[in-house]
Length: 177
Image 1 (tube, one colour):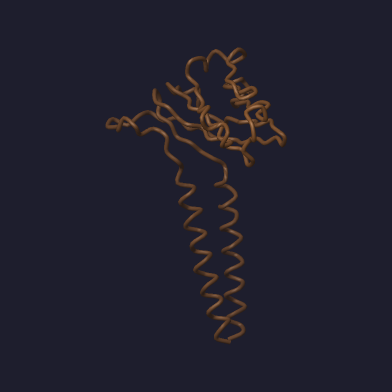
Image 2 (cartoon, rainbow, N blue to C red):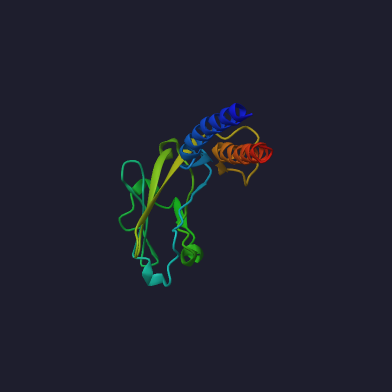
């Protein structure tokens, strides 16, 4: 019985190692958008600002470090915005006080695919990276469909559920000794 328990613990350790490897890979945010459609690139601060003035600056940069969008002291600034993003980006000012600095990129083009980084510069600075994938729109597409989360999250949830089941099995096995 003790050998069985040791074998179960060893199997659990291997499973946890594989699961946490998958878990860490799937933490990068990935968004899919269709060519000609829109995609919301998420960015939220851990600590929401107390006042609009607390938001020193939020900078969105693409994979080439080009200026995609900026929010300075709670106001949108497009003066230094790269021309390829002019009139195609928008944010959600009503969400700033909740710490949400996500942007919506409209009229997606193949060149928009890649990594985007949101730099939040407040009392404590943060940065968040989002990977945007662009795809051709399927023949039959619903009008509101366009931004879809990747299946990585489903894999992560299933992995966590499996860990819970294995822990309960190991606990019930050790309780019978």
